[in-house]
Image (cartoon, rainbow, N blue to C red; front, top):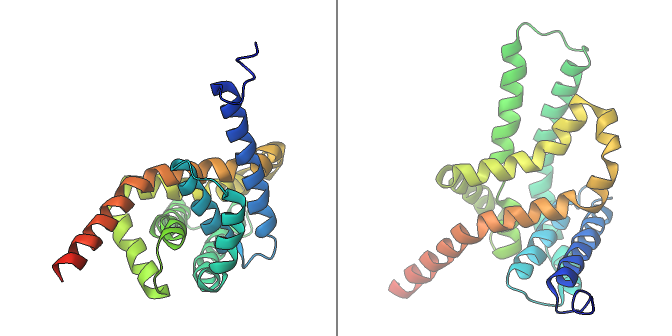
Length: 216
């Protein structure tokens, strides 16, 4: 029993990791309150999740440092991504609530697919901001390039990003039933999974950049 509750035991390590996920999930949501800061909160969450994969410490300080540092970069990125996403979600909300006449089911499918493609194109941007210094234009171009070259990873991350939105549009009452999930775990866990998906290709991009730099 003493070994079970030892700080070095797997059980206690698992509990401490779960505690970190809960705290970072709440910090993420708090930092999202001004709305336009959602991008900075997402990049900060990515930063600490990358650090967790490397077993690095000082994660809470790094979260806030990254959040403040990336505000200027992520606000325009969020306005572009969030503006189009909001427009598409508004269309879907009108459709699901029978406030928009529909000629055929193809229109619904087209709007949903465009929303999914938009999420896929932006799926790596938060991780990019967390890991690399670049320009607004380059983040967007890199996002499209990564989505094309890593389609299944980008699709998985994109689906995780828009799942809460689509879930709310389909059944807002049931969405509220799962309130504790969104509050305590969903975003930190999904960003951790996204980080694991992006880790290998990002390491490849870094190696290629270093090799090109040496050749020059």
